[in-house]
Length: 434
Image (tube, rainbow, N blue to C red; front, side, top):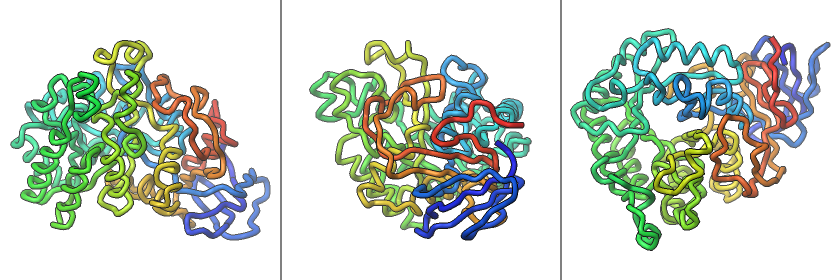
């Protein structure tokens, strides 16, 4: 809904309680006992007010794979999870490797209105790893692309990776690497370890991730450019990024909610909802990435929301697609894995799920603190709620969530995107007011 909005009694991330007045898409006033004639009033007593969440790693599938997701359905899922901005990965058809495709994605997001859609451009033409895509044209387009990734594929050629890192320096871009040595993971079905040996499934070794990260941080240091590590998943990767940061290398890293909570033990049931790339790792890795997120080695949480139609998951393990949907569950999983364990507080959550992903992606209108004059991107979250995650919690086109049937804390009660209410009282607004 549009118009003035008065949010009363919300708990800010600093612990204080305040009212917020939203007018013309911005926060007009913060204080106590606030009111506006004719404004809609939201009682936020007991709710935590977070800056609208920002996901640096979302697969919206459109154009080309609309059976899995569209920009509209994906941004509806985002709003339901408290996200007001998502970065759309380029593995579409056609691949988002030209200015025309990224501008199409931007326009689809503007029409959907549930969340800001910021396209990510491919590093190489067709994500084939053979030659650089039109990085400069995408950067100077209306989409103003600043993040480039071949996610789903590793930029395995070190010369091409070096050239990409050099190229994006001119416009303050960043290369987001899917760290996976393809020769070490041929035919891989799950994490390489005790469980894979017992099940007889081909393993995806940790070194396949760690070796690429080690190479790329050195390349980033050599050319003086920015590197972002997608979906970091192993203890060794945490150690390498920690070393690189101590050395002063401009590297950032993300972890997914599922790598903060789930382990490869779940693969024993051959339920393809748990098949993902990189794979679910050992308990030791889960502990390490939690610690890395808590101490700042890992900068952000990103969902890697990867929808698939049911037929791509309801099949034998070896034939199933990799990927999990994660937008609607991300905040609740971070609540369970990091806040309830005392490893993060709500100010930290705002940092790793809003401020820092927006900063890495140079999305200046998002990730801002809740302050007077700032855009009204707001998530109101009930930390006391508890419930089983079900398909009714999903609002995208696919239901391949690993959390179905699992008890999760919390609930997103309200999402406000640029002053427009997209979720109210825990329910997605089906038709947005003009």
